[in-house]
Length: 398
Image (tube, rainbow, N blue to C red; front, side):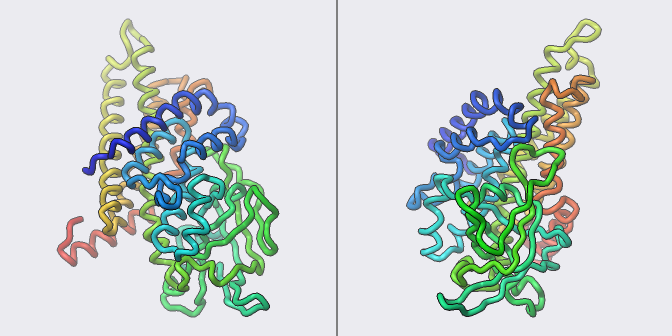
């Protein structure tokens, strides 16, 4: 696997220090009240975490995908919600960097790199879930006094950071007659005002959706009712290319979700290892009892395997080739592993694992998000199977 540069290793060490010194002492205050962690977000802006995937010429840090995954893991090890705060933002950064017009890049990337402008992506719909081919949100081109506009109607749900993002990367239909449906989809860059101004006409953000875990960072429904944006808001300037663009972005997104899962799983493993050495029963530390020792052995082994899968997918992305299969495998395995490790960490803690006095109950509440987000694992298995068959037909490695 590709080794990280000295600057990237220094960045990861900076994140680790930030997590240990600033996040861990504060996380319960924000998590238990489900409060947006504004002070921590401001520090993340200053440290450059919102510009990890932005080009250096636009003020970004421009790290490799592998380094991005490692940074994400460290943030999630402290609190998964902080890793979520840069998730969709980083995918939209990647999409604009890769597919945006020069004007789109110069307009958005410098402010996104500093975190002044935060972004999120909007795919899921209330009636569609992972069935993006059944998408109903659409944008119709109309001529107006100031030039051509796109008029958007529809809704998106489970949109993270919806209230704090001033830019939405909206996947919608721009050719409603296209067959297959995905051939008529575009990514539209919608400016929403976010936390810096009133919502534009025809756009509304719902109150945050109550959640089991992933506290602090909101998830909302976005409603578009005749909202007008310039026709130039289409990513790349050419409509009906959004499906391929977003699928490429989701490779980055799935690596990021896998890395979030790694962070939650690693935090649970570290908590279990510490507790198993401190807690004694029958005259010895509980890790020396075979039932507990076996749990720790399996947890550590699964975590290492998940990390290697994730870094392998990141390396493939950095090489410039498609990584849909590898990113899907990493997301599937890492998220399932995080859930298993979080539960096993509770078992190591016994009754205390069920108490909010210990952090393992939070890891158990946060872990399911990665199983469900960025395409449910049930859908992910379908994608992986299809890719395996497709590569086999081409005699390619799978």
